[in-house]
Image (cartoon, rainbow, N blue to C red; front, side):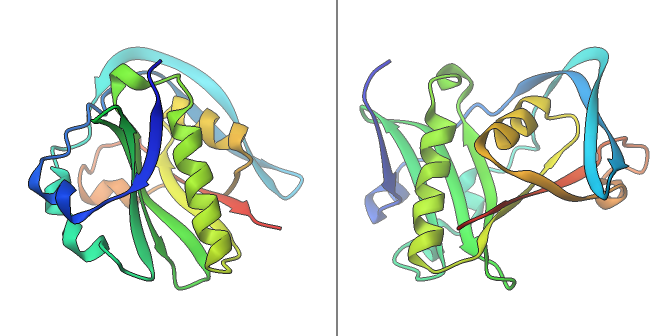
Length: 182
């Protein structure tokens, strides 16, 4: 693997589209249940399909808003001039750093880039004096859920209806993950 640098989005980055292949194969889902006042899960195999989030080019985020802003930032994973991943984070109303988006290009996964991005978020949250980090993902993104759990996040809640506004027949469940900082 070539050298990876985690850096803040700059004005120069606005001149180039940020294209990250965020598709993944879904072949299992988390089945959630409660036990001892905690949310737990088991993993259930399902017929495989490819998941790709709706095409929302990152330029639809008003990237300029993130430049030199005290309460939000975008960090890029730069692999010798190629953007291999990014994380969008902002100060949430509840004194958590809210990870609005994190993604690593399909070609660069399993090289520690997600962990490097999350390490940068953790440092940012500590500098801001925030309580922890929170984010949301879906029960069909098992790889992401396993990553968050391995990083130290715990499930704090879930929402059975969040995605039903987009697709009334969906079985996707929103899962809220939390990492408390010491």
